[in-house]
Each structure stands twice: as C-alpha cells, then as structure tokens.
Image 1: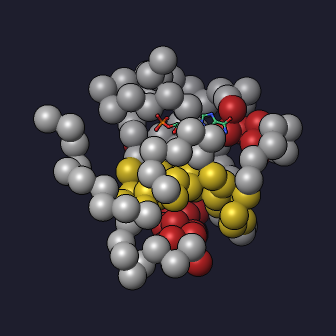
Image 2 (image 1 turned 120 degrees about the horizontal axis):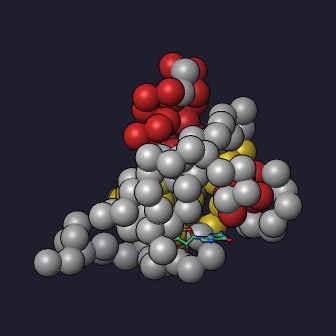
Length: 125
Ligand code: 5GP
C-alpha cells in the first residue's frame, strides 16, 4: 500500500528495523551515513537499495531536513555502491519513489539501484 509521504517518521517501519539489525538483510555496503542491501523482490538482475542512517520518510523529507554532511554522504554512498558492484561500465538506473502516486511503500528514504540488463523505457506508458 503506497504511503503518504507527508506523515511523520515511523520508527517501526521495515527499513528502520533493518537498520537496527532486528530484521535480516543482505548488506553490501555500510558507512557513517548509509547502508545498502539487496531488494527482497528484485525487478532487475541487480537490485540494491541504499538508505540513509538518519530517520527520513522520503527524498522530500531528506532534502528539506538533512544536514549538508548527510546529503553529501548519502549521495557519495549511492555512487560507491554502484561503482563497487561494477555497474558503471554497462550502466545502471537510480530510482526513488516519493509518496502515493509514485508508489512508495516503505516510509524510510531509499534509492533503488537497478542494473544487469537493458532496463527499457523509463516508465510504462
Ligand atoms: P518502494 O516501492 O517503497 O519504492 O520500494 C520498496 C522496496 O522495498 C520494494 O522494492 C520491496 O521489494 C523492498 N522491500 C520491502 N520489504 C523488504 C524487506 O523486508 N527486505 C528487503 N531487502 N527489501 C524489502
């Protein structure tokens, strides 16, 4: 069920539990600002989620409230994850859903990194 991205942060969301280690995930990256792990239901041969350590509902919330250091750290982490996974040569797609019309389901900011085949048009028509 898509979320309302204007709601306050919910500490019990699934990615908050993954961050706290209460739910398992296959982590591929972590640093001071972000962690990355495999999506449980991949839609491409490689499908990684990158999330900030801070409590932000969405890209909207993050871009409005996060510190410059958090924003720089998160953006660098997304790039590093793709680079470390060897995705740069063939290319990859970044995707962040924000709120209802975009279909955001988990109310903790996450960027999808997708790669491993030609990914087709940006959106289904
Ligand atoms: P959204 O639709 O919010 O942009 O994407 C949420 C993503 O989180 C989906 O691609 C979904 O497969 C993934 N996801 C949901 N629950 C879990 C989970 O418990 N573990 C992992 N690794 N991914 C999850």
